[in-house]
Image (tube, rainbow, N blue to C red; front, top):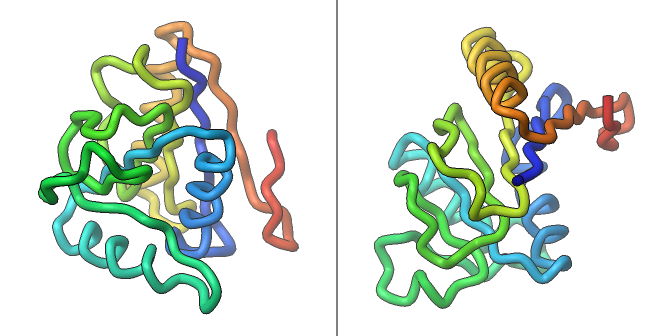
Length: 149
């Protein structure tokens, strides 16, 4: 059964947090898929993962590119797993996939300053908990470090 982690953004935006989470996943030898809900967010993440650091980048593709299946990170609007990823990041309210057993971990990243995002995350939490999944909640401390609550 997949682990499901909820990351509550309060002090940093998605663009500051997501690259680090992806890097840690790749460090475990996992492929990653990132699902957003809008073409605009997907395009922004596509650009950002190439330029988020002066000395680093994250090799990736969108699911529309012909070599997506070979990439360590794939960005998508769909619910598929185009690169056989072990971890799936759900951002900007992307829906929980119907089938989670193919993943080691699902990560729901939500904006704690957005009431709609908070409500959606709470609903997802209740649903996956009721389904019997191992669920953890992570919140940033005042220094921006993640603490398991």
